[in-house]
Image 1 (tube, rainbow, N blue to C red):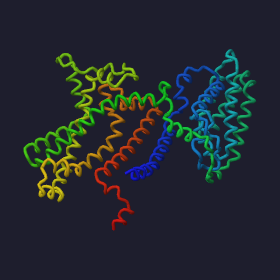
Image 2: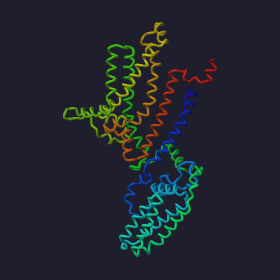
Image 3: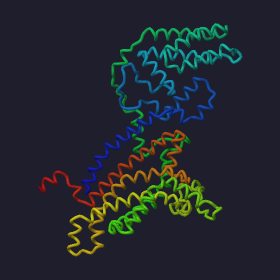
Image 4: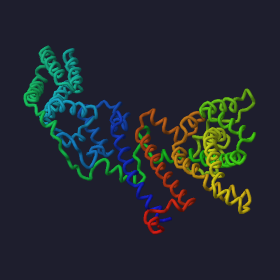
Length: 478
């Protein structure tokens, strides 16, 4: 059994590694700049100059490890530099990439963009009392040009600058040399394209000091990064939400399985009876009712003081200390959790009961069951010792997919009843674009899916030793 377990574990290791790579890749493709998202208040309230904002960005980027290459290697056009990740602000980086795709000459593109930044610095250093309409208009044109990714449009903006600067003598005296340098660099860019480099691929080795390597090591240590919302560790936020989700599911899942086994076996034994028909009708009726609709109805009924049924409170759970014992959590939240637990039990129970009934009917018609009855084995022993272990495989398979759902939580049920669990945390993080939390939950769900499949395989091997047979066993027995 140990050998079988180790073999299955080794088979799942590449799947987990692939999931890590995909999760990391998706986290780098989401919209927005992670440095600005994580430090939104500082950047919004900042009244510093452009140079100070750049220094602040580089400092925050280095602290978050985002000033390093993304992966161990990069397969990219030869025109691309290996320092794109160091360019501050994602929107500017994207503008430079689009300009590079039109021209292919990276040194010329970089020189043009740097000269544009120098012109902006010169304009910002001008005393406030020298303000004029021409200066204001020139600032607007520079800001527009910084985010323009079309070289033909850039040409028009430069011509507009040439018309604005002579309108103010002080503006012309201060900014004209910087404008001349900008125009010179732009003309050089347009006159020396290197588009052939855009079609020549290059493989660049970027070493082990990269974002994925450090993120992977952090994952192994349980470090999932920091939340953009409040700067707290993602693992701490997930751990607290997970406690609530587990608290609900440690009651809901066993009850759903026990009810499914009891009802499903009885329906199979009394197939075609009045009980079987009524239970089938009830199960189909329950299955047809959406859990969110049932949750809303129960919430209205049992939390309405006008009807004398003020049984549920939807506040107070957030006030519990995360260091409190499970007993305290259960005693304080018992009234609040009964209805959410019921809303999780009945959908799972209906599906599992139908699976149990079908599998049990099939098992009771097998030859080994008829043989056991012919030998005089009691009916109770036939059902639970011979038929049930063979009919339990569908329930075990369902548990493999149910495990990640248990931990991921029910978004609808937790939102309706204000349970601060994983589902509620996920929907809140998605709404606020708190991507480290979102991808942390995704990664946890992937890990638990793999664990669920591994547990299913082990349960199969335990119930039926033939599952553990490999080719060597078969050839030896032959």
